[in-house]
Length: 504
Image (tube, rainbow, N blue to C red; front, side, top):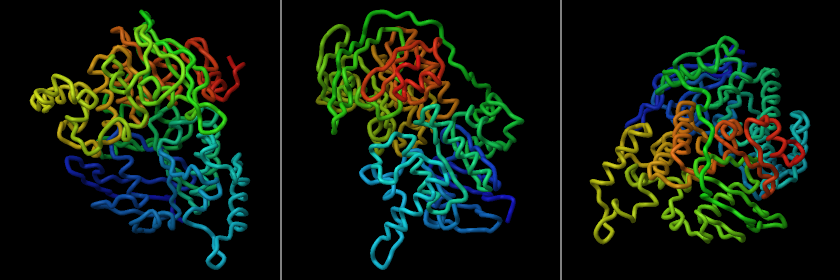
């Protein structure tokens, strides 16, 4: 066996306007966790898609256990013992754990699926890994942490020895993160290899053995984790000193901008999606909503932004309303949606149109008979792209061509630049690098200090704790606690998120 499980040599990938990977060389050893970090658009995801056979490189070589290999498809990668757990889970919600795990690799007895053999193998894996999973459970009924374990189970069922995880902790509670890290350590100790892509540098320090930093498509360096620090890694990633803590003065709340009273949304089964939610958001404060995804946060945001019918009362600036999405924006509400590709951008539209999306029918962007004022639109788009550091600096590039972080900057820039009275920010920094996180956080706090009301919904507890002046915790469609970030720990909030109301 080679010392290295996987080696990449001079991997290069070019796209129009972007050199995504510029002669990248790196390696992960058997028995170690290698963290791969870098800004959004640095080339991390492209590189791993090349390893997993989703993208073909223009140049370079891939070696598995010292042997040069060709990886044209995910099937090739799986045959080589490479597995990948994507940031957005690739599961069929209506199928069972067992069905999802064996999908595409079902054992056969003649033409029929041998479910007995499949179940035996899956149960053995579950017991070997120590996962708390029922093979007959339906995916949509499982919490997010359990769904991630199913994704890992899928890769190991396919005999993966080299495991790639892309932002694996983005939607997990602190307790679920610790369970994941325990698995990663044990998996590496068995002699396997792990590549961990993440923007959470404290997690890099906790679980990795070495760290490779990529910036602008090139490897900046590889360091041993015990010999570096969060500040040093951030400097390598961004090329400058990064402020790692949110700098803010105490809030000075003003009048009530948003008031929710007894909001209710029915669910598909017996459990409502929203079950009597009531709260207020004042001008000049950030109210954070914490909770494991799937506990009503999405429905709450959709109600407030006019995207979902509901029972109960909503008041904007004291006026009771039953809003539509268009009316909400006209009242001065901005919305950073949790799904940037589905609801934040029109992927085939250029930047200049995505930046006026939602206000495109109004002056000054639309003139006589509704025709676009292209000169006004272009000047405004260039201003937003520059102010919010969108890369590349093109107002004509279509949304699909941006990295996740730069696509997010377009959305954040659009929603903040219109100077709303209320900003509803759902997962505003999901999948965003540390430099962009610093930038987005600074802009949210500046908006708060200028009198904007902010409702922040985030699965990242550190983000909620850092930005919020008050925190509401949601569980199964209800608000189960209200706390102040300087009076509780992340662990206490994590317990509330798990439904233990006596945690604080």
